[in-house]
Length: 587
Image (cartoon, rainbow, N blue to C red; front, side, top):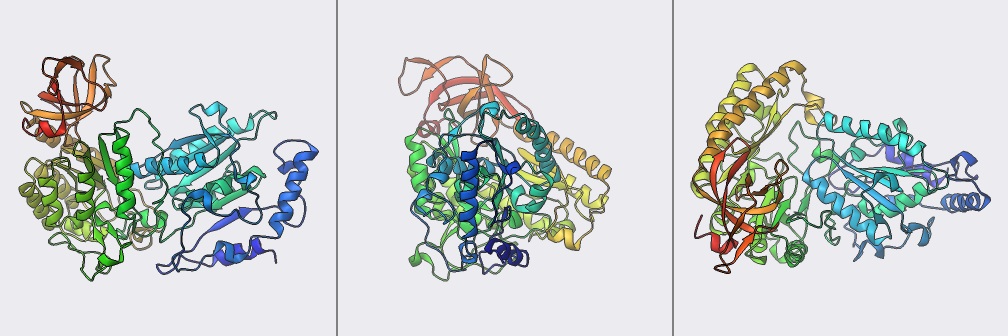
């Protein structure tokens, strides 16, 4: 039996277990001991046919089974993505991009934005070029999301559009290659390759280092995929390339995966188990962003505040995780490691003029030391995302969230007592399995009781592999879900307008992002609470240079007097340009 056939047969019987690192790798190969048929060649000519024959012969002699299935023991990672030796069936030259142009499209959460920057960093070092023009691209990569069915349908629709572009590709040009990256690649695997024959490669969230090899295989006319779920991969040694040169802020990934196993959530199955990046590598990235002049970083993770760095042995003492009062977990208490409060403290010390945010947290991981640090440190934003998901204790139990409505409300009060003036945002799901009208009304009442400044509300979408898919029934009719969602949105907007209305008359520190999308004469930025602030583009005093009149530029801190508020936006007039440190005396 050919080695690749052996791999495929064994891989189908494997399941991902917490004690092993198992990869799912698939190569849609032609018969390995014969030459590729002429229809598989991307362009005519005897020279290219010889290349394909050579590739097939090398593929026939490797790789071995062990090449793809690694032992569960931690492997020492190369110091850089390109330091690893090429696989036996590829040459170093075949792994190079040879200035082929890559077009990247990002869908879904901010983690995917960061993943796009990581993927591009790896491809750039392999000799690929970046293009923003779809028509001139040689490679199109879609960084995808699987959190809801609608997100996946968007990708299917996009693939149908790209199919026409690929079909019309001129024979005189390099064949167009299309790849699916991220969560959808991991979740759907064979379905994408079988349903969309025009997809050339798949790369899961932990397989971006493998992109040069996958593209090299795709260049031979074959489909290739790697959706390995790793227990170690954090891309700690890969410095993301900022995709927007004019940006004033950046996202810094500090951990990957999630262990919470909420019954509705696909994330543990598409992004794997929790693992945290070493503190030292995070601080190095933040320092570089500060040197580049960025004024705000957002620490990023699926469960960002459960960060636990075990890379430094001296900190791996048997000190257990300290949860918020009244909260439990679906996993055993974790011991040792440098925790989120330590990281937050260290990151905030890098640059006192750089704002620090973090998302997305879980309510269970807000011990007092984290709240106290947010209160005391001037450059840590007084804004907390506190996903509730439901206002019904019965539904929260079915969701396996680890808390009751009462515990959640108590935490809200504790946070507001600990951090005066804190801005709160939340997530809510309408129409989860078994949700009754009474459950829905309890969620409505929670929205009214808390008065969030921002909210993200969605109708429930059943996901395969989740606990809800296997054990619960998606029994709320679609029209009921949408009606309940609309009611939640209406109530949220009413209460957010009231909450944001308390800012009217106050002076807010705003980090300028650029021109307003709706008015060429206005500028836009965000305040400490992450609310959008609109103000006229006018001359103002510069507090660092008395008597000097300036106009605000992206990356400037300005003080804005708020004159009106809505559920999503604050408006006002600008007072002066300032610094984060000096502004603390005015706000």
